[in-house]
Length: 587
Image (cartoon, rainbow, N blue to C red):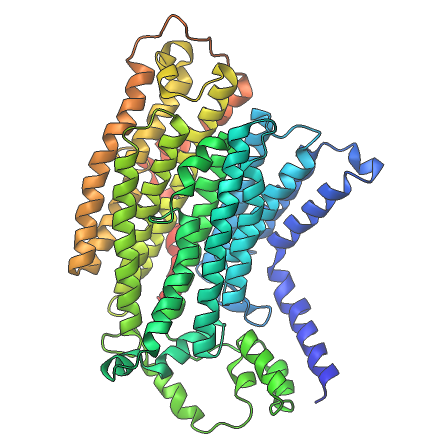
């Protein structure tokens, strides 16, 4: 088979298989193009950018819904898209729904607060939707290059959004800090990607898991082969990029300054969507590098693999094959022992003592240790904050630590108890879903009060209950839900998080359980301080009146209501999270 036939097969695979499952991202791309054309085409210029962005986000949300509806989420089979660059499974579907639903809510919030006016609306919404596409790619990454591409696509628009407020020095400073720190983290991450891919001979994550089985880390450690140190260094460098997106300690330093300098709306965007996508990527990396595929790496499609067989000998074709992650393309020059290698791959399961057990131990130890430090630092640093956005920034850091814990628990459980590992990821998804309403609601209230009071200092919220009782009550409900107090929605994910840590066992994860419980109690103090200021402290004589319109009040109510309802009826969402996580460990 000649090269044109191979190219035709690749095009056919892309058009017939991959693009139909890439609908939400395509809808967002089309919306961005339309927003940009609105500046140069007179007819399109008459359409408000809000309408274009909102319609595009809604179309993307509808495209993200499975054909069988949410009831068919668990039945979705894993498929690789674009020759292994992305993966389509139930987790991808759920996170697409999460991100596109958040985009719809965020577009509405941006219009209500007035941050996106008609003059700059095209640019603002294009940046928001562009970052959302990057986050969708992060959530479905199946290749180290798509992993890096997704992180950068999500990060670069965020740098601009952090400084979107014109004429504000602190906003420009926040954008500059964010861009400089992000560039450093991206460089370190890319170097780590090159180390791992170069050592294992592939950048396709399932293929890399197979190579790790063949690499036999345990044997090399026993033989004092220090090649393993290079592998560990590369993994830590990739972890730097993930920790930066998660604002995990010690790569959190950008978060408080950026949140304070940027507008409250952008703080909500970074604290919810960016964190969810980074956590999904952490799950992909954790499972990808610690679980050997039961049936080997999935080839793109049989015709493509067959076509490549006739081009097996030239090294250029083998290099392209390795980049795309097709094991048969990469080794089509007739290497012997293929069947025995597959036997080793199947034997490299998650069981203790398998070739991947040192990788699993390393991953669990690093993630759990960082999670413990992150949630502790975030809660302790929040105590002395006087600006509400800085307080919520440190709260975001603390919650990032909490949400990393079930990832460590899931990887630790995967070998002996896949069902419990699946439940741990389901707990993470439930946490992220409820966190959307809690944090977006909190930042929305801060944005509305900023417009009404021209202040973001906590002391200026004194006596708010007498000036805007509904807003004060909604904010109090959200704050206590962030603590994890029953009967509010934040209680259930915290409880399931602790349950996952308990089931995983081990000294480090049991210590993480104790730390998480203690930090939950510690966080009550600074959240309660804000609630006390709003609801108990007397209103100062110099306070400004607070007048919010019907639509802002309705939006706040729409964010606070699920926080109360899901506390009583968590099963409204929990089955979807279980279905989304069910296929990750073969449950």
